[in-house]
Image 1 (tube, rainbow, N blue to C red):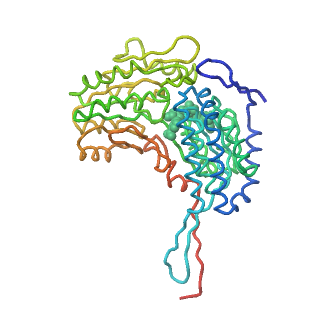
Image 2 (cartoon, rainbow, N blue to C red):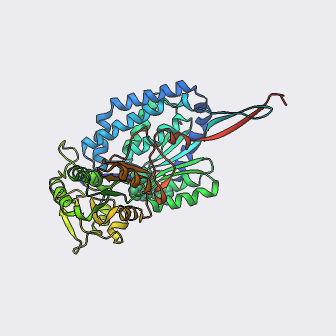
Image 3 (tube, rainbow, N blue to C red):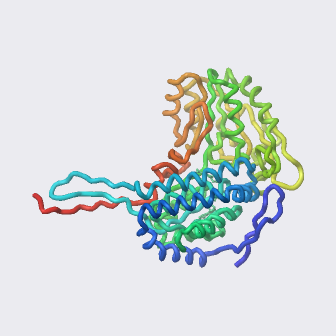
Amino acid sequence: MSAIEVIEPATEQVMAELPRAGVEEVDAAVARAKAAFPAWRGVAPADRGALLHGLADALAERLEELATLEARNAGKPIGDARGEIGMVVETFRYYAGAPERLLGQTIPVAGGVDMTFREPLGVVGLIVPWNFPLTIAAWKVAPALAAGNCIVLKPAELTPLSAIELEKIALEAGLPEGVLNVVAGPGSVCGARLVEHPDVAKIAFTGSTEVGRGIAAGAAATIKRVTLELGGKSANIVFADADLEAAAAAAPGAVFGNAGQDCCARSRILVERSAVDDFLAALAPRVESLRVGDPLDEATEMGPLISADQRSSVAAYVPDDAPVAIRGTAPDGPGYWFAPIVLAPVANSERAAREEIFGPVACVIPFDGEAEAIALANETIYGLSGSIWTRDGGRALRVARAVEAGVLSINSNTSVRVSTPFGGFKQSGVGRELGPDALEHYTDVKNVYYATGED
Ligand code: NAD
């Protein structure tokens, strides 16, 4: 087995080496999960909930250690990493309450009693990206376990370390052997094997739309259930009547958070034409003063990009003649640094406004009036998230209903809460994570009719 060298993006140094799994390891993990399934689904609901609470406690105890690991491996500011591991804990706690609440129905029918059950699927394959490694894993692992499934989790090759820790911590917290199995290896080998494996009932994938398309096609061969959380090119719509200071204060976090490597990044800032100059004037000092640097420094607001490849890919969206209106700063030297950039004005038809850049580059796109704002927001293959800034409540709700996206916020840039559904419209995905909705995607409905001998 060859080795995976895990690189720390802020230093370009190797921070760990681990065996690179292949098809054999995936098959062995699926076999372990399959063997563990009958006993795991049979664990009493309250006991399954108690195990998930125990896992949440164990993760909370190791919060600082996990946050540091994630900050180093994914290059994210330590404060953000703490927040993310905090959400991981919260996710396990939320779904710890679920096993006893997986309710069925009774349905009035003639001649007997009809009832439904929500049954676990069996072995589920979870494939996650490198931008929020443990957070996105937890969004899948927690509801899958709560519903009684066994898991093979494949982290991204660039960021496998926190998932490997999760597996160890889960065992220490009392999760039975074989219920959660982590396989670290290339997507084209390990991910692809999970997708084709006949004993895997479902794939839950988060990653790029391109890979998601292949997964949907591959899963068709064995009629696997599939949920997909894919890319985005979300709109941050700022009307002239908005609190421009508040909108400008929130905009950098909405697009430069996680160095722009965020599926929810509001990377198209649509600004009503009459407010463009004032908005840019309010935005400039906030972008120029963003503290880009060492992820482990408490003052850091933005870290490096994940890899040299990612940096080249982002740089290609800012050619020498790009209309750079605002440019922040970034350190020199080792590390995959990239200064935050705002391009303005940009037409929605331009490449930087159409494609998911997945880096700290935002486009300001002027618009005239509500109808054009909606049309521009929807003129994309994606439909993940978005924000609407206005003081007109009626307009806020009209626009929120008209924008084709799964997760919208009004006068805010919040996308994600453990208790609310998260996922995309259009080519941003299929299915929902978090909240009660996620549980539906880790269960199938069974209908049972019991004839009672009545007419
Ligand atoms: P990616 O699609 O390259 O990889 C994601 C995962 O899929 C990795 O674990 C990878 O190893 C695996 N993979 C790659 N090829 C595969 C194949 N042929 N079969 C099976 N698995 C395969 O994505 P990435 O570069 O790690 O992450 C960035 C992308 O993820 C962006 O497009 C971003 O928008 C998206 N993303 C979406 C969400 C969301 O919730 N909608 C959240 C985070 C990231």
